[in-house]
Image (cartoon, rainbow over all chains, first blue to last red; front, side, top):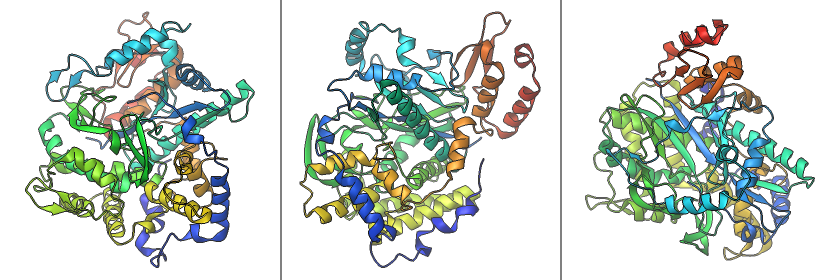
Length: 57
Length: 499
């Protein structure tokens, strides 16, 4: 199963990516942003109020 | 000795279809939904959470009184201790069980970051699959929801612990001296991001911070994990030959959704441990007030506010990490491929954090979450005081692919991937064959019905065998593991295995 890091070396290099001009590259695209906003608007405004957990480690 | 690490993740769990649910029962029932478990009684004899790495045994843990109260409540339930724990050793070498009312998935021992990430994400898939089965059983779609995060925004935290195998000869005082400062500033790339601030049981809607766990770190060192949590946990429970090894059990880290963030968190820590072992740690990185610094670093999203060093100088969190990076670069001038990758990505990440952190929105959790929240604020014409943001923070970590915001980002191709979905599917079934987890998995696969009980380093077979114990407490050398794998493959009987 194990892969070599060389296989993904280039995509892991933020310096080589053409995104030095400001904000995140892909989320600026309307489609992605709109889809994510749609997902966010569906979240129950009381979601975190109802969310109670017991202390863990 | 192998570079060996693993992750334990406690998941948040909630029933949305009823007002009050019992987290013990829900966690237990979730684990029991695992469809192909290896079932045997877990052997708790290898666990001793009171043994302190500083060389003594604690009289009691601060959580004990609370646990006694929980046990009192648990007595009324119609389940035994073992039933409630529902402790499973899976065929892929992982442990999956109900720990302190949270479903917990502990990856098998791994030697490479890619293997670790595959197994960490395999845990997400296994937990998610169990939730789907549980919801089918309940007959209510989406009734049970699971979160890979570390807080409930009401003052209750649960952990994601990173673990590392170390030779016992490294003095624990060296670890505390050099590792505590490193862990304080590690959160600038490993933090999962959090809306607001928690102090005790109080939550304040107060902007955004880098880390989920920072608010819960109260002391520099302690054996405790549930109260007065430490930057450096001193639990000395090696799950290996105590004379030769120790297991460093770090509880300060956030549960990362991002594969890259997990890789950088564990990768840099593993390298720094080797740096410390070689006596090459930076000399002037000690912080004047580490506990306060954990919070101040987390709450400074500009990453510019100076930290006070013990020698009186000041330094930014990014430059503080650079001290450690430089020591690792000197220690590993011609390193293996993985170490080289860690060093390169560490340096580039620090440089980008210094210049413009938002450039890292495709790989660091806190940046990705901040980007999402800012997009929401902008679109809704609201601000950081909006109470809906805590719900969005929570949903970033939801494991439901239809709801989770991180998973939404990933589905849109916005998050950097280091592994493939095929790697994850494979890790759900197969242990890493280059560690003792492979040996354990092989034994489980071949001799399941003969096993009486099991733990990380020991398998006890049924009493009819003369010497029924198989030990793996010193099995950390690659050649020895490969040899043992071959031997077990050729063993036809338990007698042959135990010979």
